[in-house]
Length: 94
Image (tube, rainbow, N blue to C red; front, top):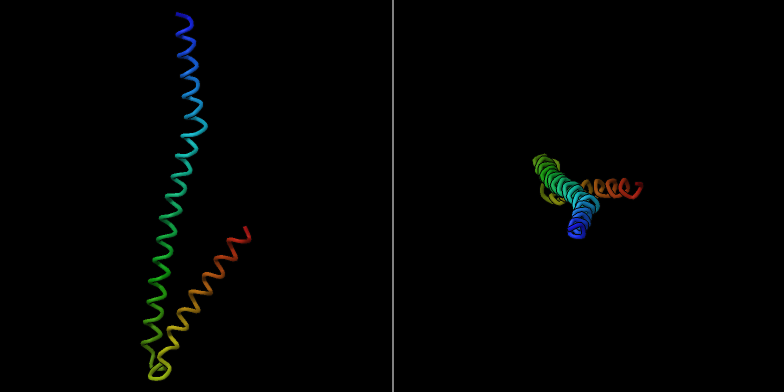
């Protein structure tokens, strides 16, 4: 009888150890990743909408007509590239 209880204690101890050292940290990392993925998708879609809005706003001006119609696309692309470079520099600093 005593040996059976000892085995049950060892199994219970092992299960609680696994839960403490494996399951709980993985659950925390999963939540962290979920928030990170959702945040990056929202920021990315916001930047795309901002770039399209900027492009449309620049196209509405009468300065860039006829031969200069390609300039708003270049300005929008340059703005997106600049934002990407600034973001990557900030990531590399950390």
